Length: 211
Picture 1 (cartoon, rainbow, N blue to C red):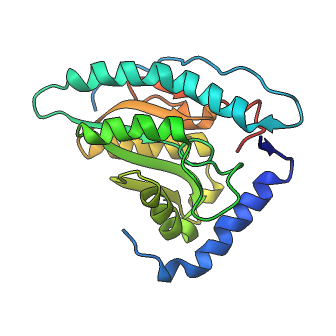
Picture 2 (cartoon, rainbow, N blue to C red):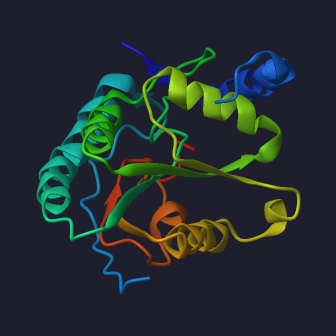
C-alpha cells in the first residue's frame, strides 16, 4: 500500500524537471456553458494520503463522469466538435504517487479518456506546469495512452498570472477553435472555476495535500 508523504510532491517535481534535460531525445509527438458542481470525494487522513483510498475516491468521481459522457457524446449535434479538458498533476497522471518518469496514468481517469477518444472526442490538457517541460509532459501523456489534441503550459509571463484565470483563458481559446467543452476534469478549484465547460468533475485533493 502506497502513501503520499509530505515530501512526495518535491520528489515528483524534481523527477519531471530532471526529465526535461533529456527532452531533445524524446519524440515530440462559444456556446453558452453550464458548469455543474461535482461530488467531492471523501476526506483522507490529515498527514498521509493512502494510494488505495485515493484510487477509490477517483473511481467514485469517474463512475459518475462516464455515464454522463456516454449520453452527451451520443447526443452530439451535426458537425459538433466535442472536447474534454483535463488537468494533469494527480488528475491524468499519478504525480504525487509515481516517483518515476514517465509518470503512471491515473487509471480511473485514463479509462474515461480512452472511451472519449475512441468516440471522436478531442482531449485537451491545461496545466500550471512551465513550458520548459512541455515536451516531456506531452511524451508522458501519450506514452501512457492519452491522445493529446492540445497541451497548454505556462510561459514565463503566465507564471505571474492567477492560475484559475490562466486556465479559464485556455478553455476560451479551445472554444474559439470551434470546440464544445462537454466536460472539465481536475482536482483543484483553480482547474474548474471560471465556466466554459458544460459540466465539471472534481477529483480529490484532500484540502490541498495533492498538487
